[in-house]
Length: 221
Image (cartoon, rainbow, N blue to C red; front, side, top):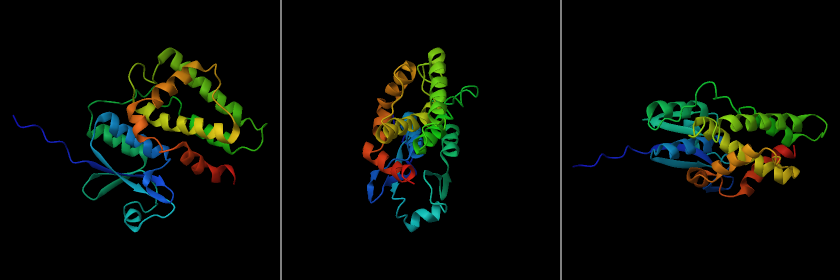
């Protein structure tokens, strides 16, 4: 019997390390797309883009100069990780990683709360407590629904949150000496599960230093 040929690899543009266009960079939205492709077993080809020196070919397919961008049809490049991951789910429905609507927004405010706290220079502005509130809400959800957001099986919401939590852990430790409180045991178990998945290890930034370098201008502005 003839074997079923694999589909042509989809092409995806993701962030490279500034000045090193052959090393994968620190974009959590790019990693979200790569995680989705990896977990679905979809062949793909990455095109690494140095966003500090955007090549002309990239600006032609992404006029706003943003990543990720996915080519899923001939000459059709799709921007925005929300749109890209939805299209991947529709075009490649098996295995399904759709998160039920009632759980899809779990943890969705953690990243913005993290960025506000990271950039804060006023210890009394409430930004740390706002982040703690979001992490505590995630911990409570995981306590009754875990180990993943949708229970036993990983889903799209986890692919979105995992890279953001990685940035939170690395950046807050470096810039503020801050870490997720030990009493949030379900969040700690969750990050350990996520960060040790083969798909995450394969697609994460090449080094923590690249995450730190990516946030440094925002912290120091």
